[in-house]
Image (cartoon, protein in one colour):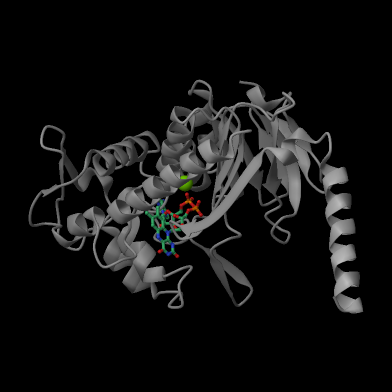
Length: 352
Ligand code: FAD
Ligand code: MG
């Protein structure tokens, strides 16, 4: 063996030994199985804590398969899907869909009503016109926006529950499940992992976090809330949760800036422009990820007062709202589990 090779071999042994010493006694690092995939237009990160890595791997594989299945059914970014068929048949006919797609559309419809149209799944023509997050993003002319506003109306969505079929009343109308389908995928991943006997897991579906149990030492998961004014990965607060979902909608991931103004991807269906109700980030903590996803988008559009009064009516749902005047509002249920870490923001605790 050459001298240099011997040196490299010794070095590798030393590093490996150091690493294993470092991990000694750290149960968490020994039992963690991690995987990252790209799906639903975002990065999905799995962290499963289990001694049986085979079992964990199987649970992750099943989850990935399910995520891809949901994407195939609900995407509007591919050649075909069930949602694309509904859009192509707008004003023409009912389309039969799978129980998955029907469930997510039904939930979207419920949240459209509950938020009085702040959340509106028929927002797709506006999303397409603005193209935010795509290479075609631009500020449309006011006339272009106004000409589409009459198409945006969740009440034109006709649901036939008996036959699992869906129709949009008028030609030109279209639905987009981008504000809710990731949430559904989160709930499905949690169900699959649990069915596979996983008791400890953290999964992040591009800002939709689902957790199972607590960390291995019994302490809660610590979820960082992104500072919307700073670079990615910079937190302004930490929420501690056990077994719950945390979903954030913000203006800092999909946007473009023109003449110093930010245009982001969450639309106000009434104006046709990106929502500007004073919120720059809204986070929901809830048992269900689909509810949290729908509500985080709803709140962003509803604004602080209306948004908080909606959350206060709901059980087991909490919110963190960051406004454009650097204030962080939290609902009463988060009092003991929320910690502001950035002194540039003021914390305001609401009493339910
Ligand atoms: P959220 O606040 O949860 O949702 C915002 C999104 O909802 C907007 O982007 C818009 O689509 C829609 N929306 C805007 N305003 C409203 C409103 N008022 N009411 C209801 N809905 C509204 N992205 C890609 O770039 N490429 C892909 O191939 C791709 N495929 C996807 C497939 C599926 C099945 C899904 C669910 C999403 C896909 N995405 C894709 C979208 C991408 O992941 C989005 O960033 C994501 O859906 C937006 O989620 P969010 O958490 O950032 O924001
Ligand atoms: Mg959402």
